[in-house]
Image (cartoon, rainbow, N blue to C red):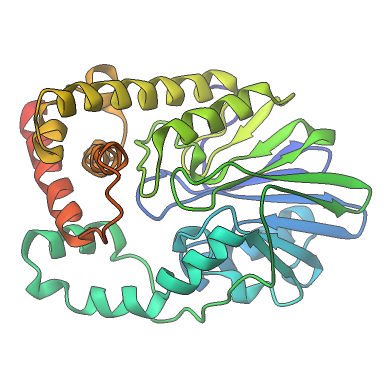
Length: 323
């Protein structure tokens, strides 16, 4: 996509719609959106810590004339901290999320847990080194967590001035309660982590079939600009490419399950082909495990540290193959 540059900062999509981008889009470097009409403004997602969120809000004030105090609504597309940890800084806003997202934030979203984890990485071997590499730049200890004020299930319409913003719950997929925000007047949709562009998706919740359906929902919308949760602004070609990855991984995983492999053997055996050039290809390990859990109707508590260990091993394996 040459139409929009993938550079850090606020990008004007026209007629009061903006995207805030954070290259390279790898772990923690998420995107956000701003929708303005008249004196009213809505923010789609905050960032991974308060320093980054404050920097974004300053950029919005400088470039669009919208300071934090003018933002009346924040929509959290899902529960992950890189889309929620800056909520507190938008002090006058009503924070909206799906009920499933709010539940996940209450149960698992505490930034202090991440801050404590980061203090202990020195004793965690390769996984600790991985955490330092992907999360070491963020200040979780400085975050005061703010949960949603209002929740919904299914769909909800929010007004920004005279402009309609349609919130559509498409999860569980990436997480338990993924939501996309569609602005018909602007022909723009903000997808949260239903879309990673030039980056590898990670299905923490699944089922992957829901995620494929979510891609179809986006493809059915009358949109011109599509703002992903990570990576550059795209169009429907980017959505189709992401859908291809999900269909491919789902099919390849099911073949290996039928052949009697366990989930880790399957993850190591799947060849990524042209998808292997995407950022963070090692996330395949988690998505394969999620598909296995779906097939096996396994609802037990999963060992997240074990999954990060698998990602570390896959990352090392892919790096060796490239060299």
